[in-house]
Image 1 (cartoon, rainbow, N blue to C red):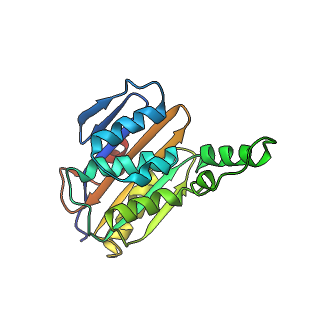
Image 2: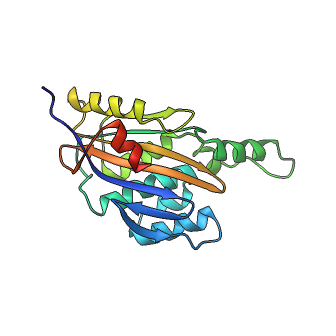
Length: 199
């Protein structure tokens, strides 16, 4: 009989607020999404200069994990990462495409480097020294029906000790993210119903 796994921690970021493990961390009083993410960064005490070069998708995923890491140990564990969204890195891709086709500007490598959702996985891995599997999936909508079984498979087959999972959908004026850590400890079992309730 397989042992149950649990949601050890979670972070939910929307246009209006950030909540971690049921606690309201910050309400949005900023003028735009970019400024709100900067406020969260200051609150996180991350001291990670590369943050300022990240695109909105990468910043959001990075901050969700960073806020969880303030409370729970993620460092130096065999932790896999499985994130998902609907639009991949469309916001950065569109900026890069516009810079290519604009007559009065040049395409910037600083924009191009963040035109893949895998950059978010890489930055989280570098920051927290994670060397396990990582995967970024594209769905029409948040899909616990796919994420939960996949995370459970990684844990049951001993491909990871913990799994960071979730949904990070970001547009210029829209934040919709929930990232959670699955492991052996916690109050709520890692089920489709409980993950749906986080969202």
